[in-house]
Image (cartoon, rainbow, N blue to C red; front, top):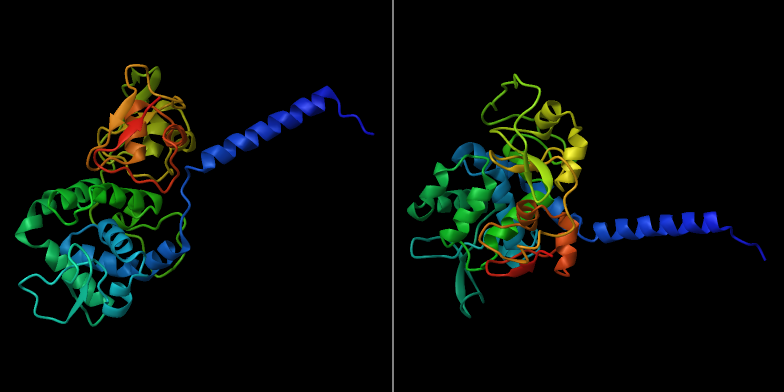
Length: 317
């Protein structure tokens, strides 16, 4: 019988441990669904058309369509071209269909085509009820998601968080910037930006850095990117994206925390739990408390499909 040396055995155990850790981390990674990607490829051009005409973020329109139709698989979408779950209301004079929803026999709008549904959705959001959303930046998908829930678009307490998760998992924010998600292949879309971003360069080779939870971080500037922060701080953009649990092209808002080193496995002792608010994603919470995203999922026995709802209590350590 062949004997395995202690050094070889130790190496095998080490490799197995690394594989196990990678599998644990992968459980909270994005597993993109083919049906979702097909829906996005089919309707991204229409969502961008609505953005150009009505200043509604394409990411929001696509995310709502994905959620409301189950990526185009719902009967309401397939038989009646209703992609946004819009009910009849008193002003609707078009075709109708009836389905069980909040009530046993709710009235929903029925459209001749998907484009008609997208057009009507944009007009629906132009009503006074949603007017305050148009004061937001065209690419502020987080603000739009929170606003839609606060304005009562859906009764689901996790609606804003669902929108944000879909937008970030499928990189729909890239369409707001006239670009493609990294996974996308569909052709026919010439990248462009609705408004020109700030192209200023930084005069100093560094920017102010801060320390919290034992971690070094900087605050994102307006129109900031990992590439700019990397150039200022002497670290690769790839590492920054990894430390912050995002793709390299992830959109940064002014004031966002960007960690310059790997985050912790759990929050500091003074923070044991967190109560979810409207607009919170698991990534937001992980950034707020300096926790690795995969560890936050594991601490709460959740997988990557979990969407936190307002009022949920999450463990931070």
